[in-house]
Image 1 (tube, rainbow, N blue to C red):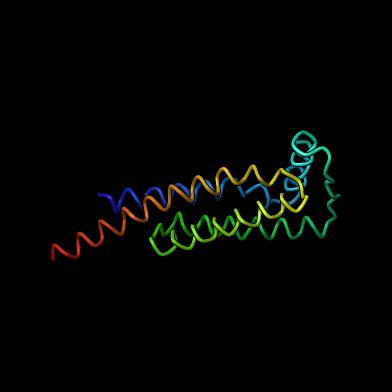
Image 2 (image 1 turned 30 degrees about the vertical axis):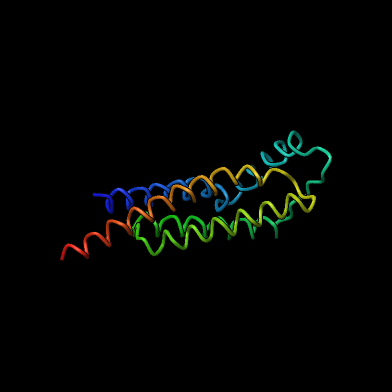
Length: 142
């Protein structure tokens, strides 16, 4: 049962990632997302600069969005331990990059994403250990 619960959690986290990154990969909508970030930036870090985004920037945002949506879709389709482990590693690296960016004088807006990166990373770690413990228990029974 714990294995099935873990797989369901892995699947739901993949769904969250897909939904939260979907607007980034849709042309024209990603520009509105950046405008929302600009507004949020004016509240969170008004003393720091927020760059203008060219079409080239939006292209890379769209590519990033597509890769994240694809990664989410893979984890929804195959919520496996192997993928969850790599997702956790990715979440740790993304968190470090976001913190480094903010500490380096960048906008504080990306720190909003730390909540989901760390939160879901912790949840995944818990369920990875549950999965592995259950898997080891199953192997010792046979």
